[in-house]
Image 1: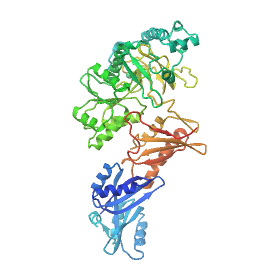
Image 2 (image 1 turned 120 degrees about the vertical axis):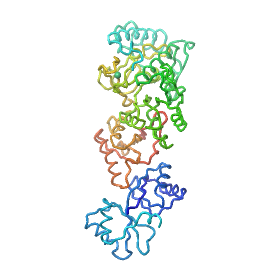
Image 3 (image 1 turned 180 degrees about the vertical axis):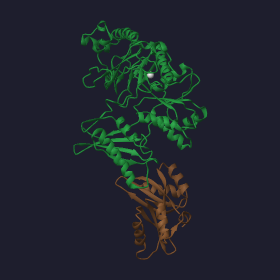
Image 4 (image 1 turned 45 degrees about the horizontal axis):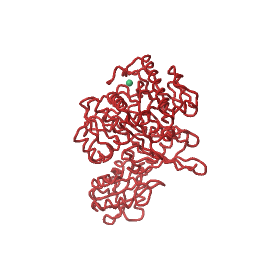
Length: 143
Length: 434
Ligand SMILES: [Zn+2]
């Protein structure tokens, strides 16, 4: 039920993000979702792409430090309180969110949010039990 | 293994008698043939006959790098040019290089010393030596070459550069020994991996002799693991002869045996010039006692080391100098604290996963020295979480604070952003304008 995210180390200087998107585009890889966490001197780029292994190879060939990370794609009802209900469930079960970001595309009428939990498996089990839809990797890569 | 049992295991008393005789001959020779030395001796009221015991070595004047430069190119040669069969020169980054000369016998001596060096590393006839030290005016390439030929090994005289081609040759020719600078060895490994090879499995290498730049114990471990070889530290400098001044033995890998039948080592206090006893750290000084074309008297190397006179398990009776941990002129003084880049390297290498690709940037802001340590982030230390990378930065800052009491800034940088050197690695940028 997990989705593989590609994480890339970036120095905080102009042009590095553009360079990543350029090398991926040149290899015909589509970026489905993207988020950057940064500090004053470095950033971590998190990407959901349509071809994880190819993206890893292309990035390494271009001297980027990259790794694969498991994240969870959660369908969030596009109604008021949709996200807060999910966060409440997680808090109730003492599951920490390391980070989260929204997916650009939508699945039917729902938004998709990518979560990185301290315990992904526990989060998946808990959310599924509460009737929340977790999207499979294949589905997410091809949206 | 020992190449020359007679000299390398000579009892100390006999060795010292030999050293004295050779020292006296050298002092007489330079006094008679080199105006620079004669003038210096005369100014001090010193005659060659004053050297009666080895302890009298300290009566002799020091020779420093600028003396060699001032006598550019051939002013310190002790034989007429027609007896000089070879010259080498140091890479002068500033101004004129230092030129050294060799007679036929000096070349033979040098080959003998490099034969001893390679033998101490376990290299023998039947080995294939991939010699990636630079050939040319630099002494590394030809020095190792002559030694390898003398022991009867097969030499690949590849010299430096064109790394991809080197990898191809290492894969196809199957060398069993590698000779190059330690930073170039790591560069070879990087390039091999880029070419889809595993340096630990895809080569036949068994051993490497690395020198010509300071490196650390941790870097040794990394090279040994990366290539699955024994990595031996070798030492030399062109002013003294080139490589072949001292070497570690495979048996102990703990300190470099100085070929004392050819060179007398001393450790001095770099500030006062006073000789220091065995075990104390200071500046390494060499006097050559067999060289003909370019003898040196008490040459101050600016290298920081110490001497250990304990008997080694390999059977050699020669003293061992500690791995050179830095140079008196590499030494950075940051907020009044003496800092050797190699000490910082050791600290970084204690951190699991970090590679010795770092850069130190020293600056001065508001009259206060600042130190920035740039470290490359590889896959082993990378994390998708900001806090984990921040922990890595904090760890570097804390470890350096513990070591020197200096608070530095640690900056994580992308791989390959720190220059890989094929010769001596540039580790420090000092922006201070004092
Ligand atoms: Zn030994």
